[in-house]
Image (tube, rainbow, N blue to C red):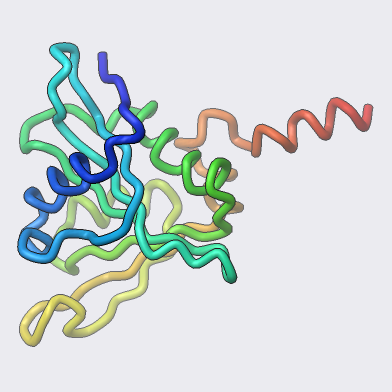
Length: 160
């Protein structure tokens, strides 16, 4: 069973950056991160949140794991998006990937991201995709276990 660690932003961000070729050299800078650990307590994956813009309510997310690990469970996806939407207060999450990364693009589309193809986003010879996921998209996602905001549930009960 997987577990999650908070408060080790620098360690997790460095771990994730080493797994993403475009980030290895520069890292992520100022960020928050969630580590994914396996049953033995080893860090196998991580989620990095950066470029938080409170004025408009957006944040960027990156994630990666050791190849061959089964880290992207339904619970991991729930934590991945509950954190920015319900703990940070974002109204939209932004994720960038390369246009040839079919696995990540399939996952993003499945979660509910709107995908925007951008020529040369990955450099002169590599196109990219920017995905956007609003809080409403997340609330309606089939991967959202709660299927609605936790505080919305409480407000509905109070109104009854």
